[in-house]
Length: 211
Image (cartoon, rainbow, N blue to C red; front, side, top):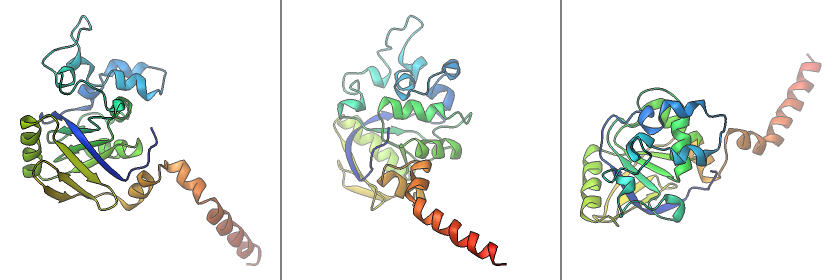
């Protein structure tokens, strides 16, 4: 979903597991779907961790626990906090569709697989890379209080654990930052530059004709 990014202050859903791969994020059987509807993939985010073979919620999975069962679309838990090496495995973009479709706007981890990181950015999910110490402290804060919040300041490129006051800076490509802050995908950005592109083409055409 295209939304402008500015400052996001939210509670978090903790998933303190390392090496979460894209098949766990969205199982391969859902790649056969003919829809591009993010809500479909969102409903099946972490499907095999959330539900048993009878499609009953697994009580021990964090999404099904009372403190974290409300979906981000309800205005809470817009931040997923995950362990190191998030999004490894196959390059399927469906994994980013599922995260966005469930309603997460930010994923925090100490390391992302490169392709998945770019897929998230292309689908209006902000991957925030923090130090392992910051990540560990954030997990501790959420364990102590499920209502612990983070503040993600996209313009300033900072993330703050509001429970402790600890803050870190994060990196983001300047082009992707501009697109997120203005709710633009790549096509939207090109259309925004239409006048400049046409001016360049006209100037170039004139110069070519006079060679």
